[in-house]
Length: 313
Image (cartoon, rainbow, N blue to C red; front, side, top):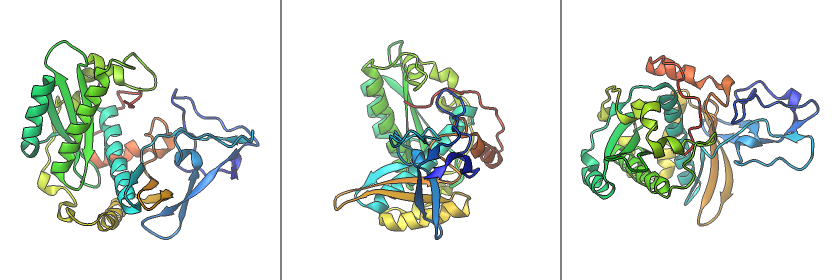
C-alpha cells in the first residue's frame, strides 16, 4: 500500500476512466500495489493492483482507491506457467498493434491465404461472407493476423472480426479466422448489439465498422514479407524455450516484460503479464504512456487518432 500523493509519476499516473475523465485521487487516499517479477532482468516492477486484477475491487477500507481502469489484456492461463506467460505476452503484442491500427487507420498488409484456403472456403460457404485477411505490423516482427468477415447481403450481422498471433504465420492466420467466426456467431444472437459506450458490437452488427476502420477491411494497403517474421525457427520448441527467446527479443526491441503468477497448480497456471511500455489499455486511458508516439516512430505513419470510442467486443 502506498499513499496516493506519493505515487511515482510513471506511465499509469493520470489515468482516465472509460468515459475519458481523469481518475482523481483524493488526498489521504491509498493505492494497493503489487510487485511483478521482471522477466528480462532481476528485480520487480511495482504497479497498482488495479492493473493486475480486472475487474479490481479495492479493499473495503474507505481510503483505498483504484487509480486506473484495466482490462484482461496480458492475463492468460495455460498448462503451466511458461505456457500461460507465452500466451499473455503474445496477447499484449496483438492488442498493442490493434489499438494503434484501429484508432489511426494505419495501412495494413494483405495476407496471402494459401495456408488456410480450405478453411476460408468453408467459412465463406457456411456463412455467406467474404473473408479479408491482413497483417498488423509490430515492433517484434511477430505474425499478427487480422480477419474480417463481410456479409454478402443486407442481413445481420453485417461483419465481424478476429485476431491471431503466433510464432507461426499459418497458425496466426488460422487463429484470426476462428476468432472472427466466433465473433460472428456471438453477434448473430442479436444480443447486446445496440449502441454502447462500453463496446463496439453495434458497429459490426450494422456494418458501420467498414467506415470506422477501413484499413481492417483492406481499403488501404502496405507491404510485408512473411519470410521476415521473427521466430519461425522456434516452431515446435517447448513453451519455456520460446518464452525465454521471446522475452529477450522483446527487450532488445524496447518491450520490457514483468509477470505476476496468480495460480500455479498441477493442471493449470494463471498469470498476468505487463509491459512497462504497454499497459492493459491504450493511450486514451493512459495518456502518459505515449505508446502511440512510439508507434508513429516505428511505422512512419503519423495519422491522428480518428476513432476514440470503445474497442471492446
